[in-house]
Amino acid sequence: MADRRKLAAGNWKMNGTAAALSEVTALAGSQGEARCEILLCPPATLVERMAREAEGTNIAVGGQDCHAAESGAHTGDISARMLKDAGATYVITGHSERRADHGESDEIVRHKTEAAWAEGLTVIVCVGETLSEREASNTIDIIKGQLAGSIPDQATGHNLVVAYEPVWAIGTGKVPTTDQIGEVHDVIRSQLERRFGPGVGRSVRLLYGGSVKAANAAEIFAVENVDGALVGGASLKADDFGGIIAAL
Ligand code: PEP
Image (tube, rainbow, N blue to C red):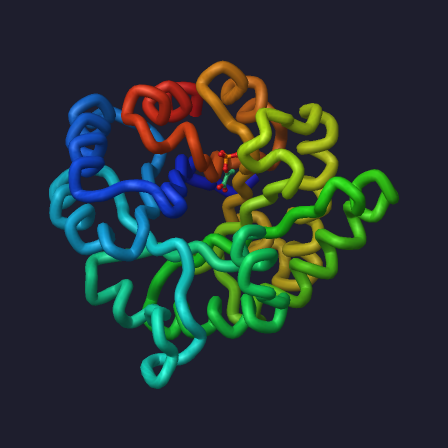
């Protein structure tokens, strides 16, 4: 099996002002010996300051989204180059909240991912089914379609991370069974191996996301092909996120 470094990624969503940067200091202080990689994705307004705060620590900083274009007339958007310039090394694309709130299709997600790769960022591409899709037994088809449409051809184990985030589990406290998580992660792994070859396919890290907390993290991390987590609410406080990191 490929040697995949575990990743604990936090998505702060639209939360946090400068005062919240004290959580980064606290997290860095408590996680100096962490075996896994740690990533925080704050709102765009905090990327640069967080990157400064995290300098010299084992915490990487990422964006929550980027535009597919390098620059131009796109009011309110930010480009991958801007994220990189601000100190980010990662970016999330295709989060279900972007897909739902901003109508982002697989094609848009793929273009954003390409733009981020052009700047040397590692991209966490999110996929996941809605509750009605799961109830209609369409989960696997939805995941396969999102993978095929959202991930560009140039994937490597370094530039790509895939996060499986069932939409119905995000921020709801509902978590799939470990069998359900394992089934989807196995499908993602085999799809990546089939498309990119076993070397690349086995080296891409797969994260689970959706109501991960310190209390359920160990059980989720024990599932095969789960290489870490993408965490929303429980990444906002150093103590909560630290509890999840400790389980990796
Ligand atoms: C997320 O935002 O990607 C997420 C998984 O949120 P939460 O952990 O709050 O469910």
